[in-house]
Amino acid sequence: MPALRPLPSRPSLEYARKEAKTLLRDFRSGTPAAVERAARQGAHSRATRPAEVRLADAQLVVAREHGFASWARLARYLADVERQQRGYIQVGGELRLYEVHAVNLIAQHRARSIAAGRILAAYVPRFYGETVESVLASDPTEEEARHAVARLHGAPSWEMLVERLARESRSVVPDGPTGPMMQAASAMEAGDLGALETIVAEHPALLEPAVNDLATGHTLTLVALGIERRRGVAAMQPVFDWLATRGLDRRSELGRRLCGHMRMRPDEVQSLLEQGADPNWVAPNGIPVLEHALIRYWNGEAVDVLARHATARDALWVAAGLGDLSGVRRFLSRDGRPTPAAREHRPDFIAVGQQGGPPPLPDPDDDEILLEAMLVAMLNGRTAVLEYLSSSSAAQINSVAYGTPLINLAVANRMAPVVECLVRVGANLDLFGQHTGATARELARDLLKQSPDDNASRRIALACGIDVGESSRGDKG
Image 1: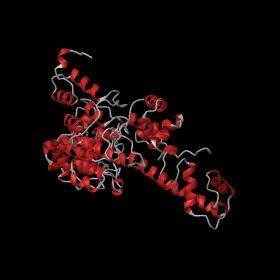
Image 2: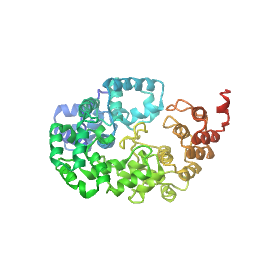
Image 3: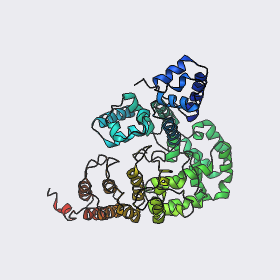
Image 4: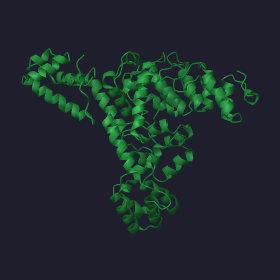
């Protein structure tokens, strides 16, 4: 196998297109180096006949030089890069932690971890589009492991991850009772634009929120929105007009807040909508706010508040997350298999900032498509959808394609109604989960020991066949 050319630290589809067009010109001019490149990639036949060579031939050579089986896979990979690096993925801490992550990824691969195989299949060019099984049968290099870790954290390359970590460490505005953010808040509260301008001039980082600042709400615009809830829109309009001249957009901040966080409450969503948040806002990564909510909120009631005002894209997983049974049915054939339309628009757990979510495999089989829909239904408590999908012969309720069965994840996250539902439809309580490090039954027993009086823990224990009185009697093995 010829040595692969690494992608640039900032790869793009435009870069790849230019590479292919340049190579095509070299082919047609009979440049020996171009013919040699084609020969090394097994695409020699037409390259020696300049009149017959096509752009597709040059594209195939460029794709293979970077480790991709086809131009289509390279293009899809670069689209993933573009979308995910624009997501709200927080990074921080020391570079050493990410280096350790890369080392651990290789160790997990050697231990045949399904999760490690998925990460490598989703992010390493020469593995992109391969099955997890084939990835686990081929050893990744340290460089590939680092590249995968960078992609997992939203960076297009290891070099860009290092750069972003340095930038994030510099971007944090020192704060506290007398810090610049609090000083700016006081000026905005008083409507003193002169004082606000002076403070910002002394602390220009206030105008340049980093990704972590945007994700956590450490921004002037969010502070202004909080003051607006107390003082009213009219009182704060001059402040927002001034912020807009400095590149800070009220509409975008509201959209980011509406993208939400884990355990988002219905009243939080309603408050943002009342302040003017656009329920159909599309984030810079190209993903509508409703689809962020379906993955980030972990609260179907809060999603419902937003969904009443939003227009949902037509997709299997979106319908599943909204609890739309008729919508789910439209994407399944009579025998329960996903139709071609079910593959046209898929969730990207990484791009929406749900770190720890499964990396999207580029060439999913039917079970992968159904499992994505079931996972999103689970996150939103849509038990009717789970029951419907599980009743189909195509649905794999006990799939370990994510490394951990859904029932284990539901128990670990105290989703009592979902656990009860999954047990009803035949979930295996004794399958080991790589993420959770235990079976669902073991997790349920541990939850009960930790919180014997908690209603969710008791419901989960009962669903898993555990005597809820045993927690007060001690562990009897």
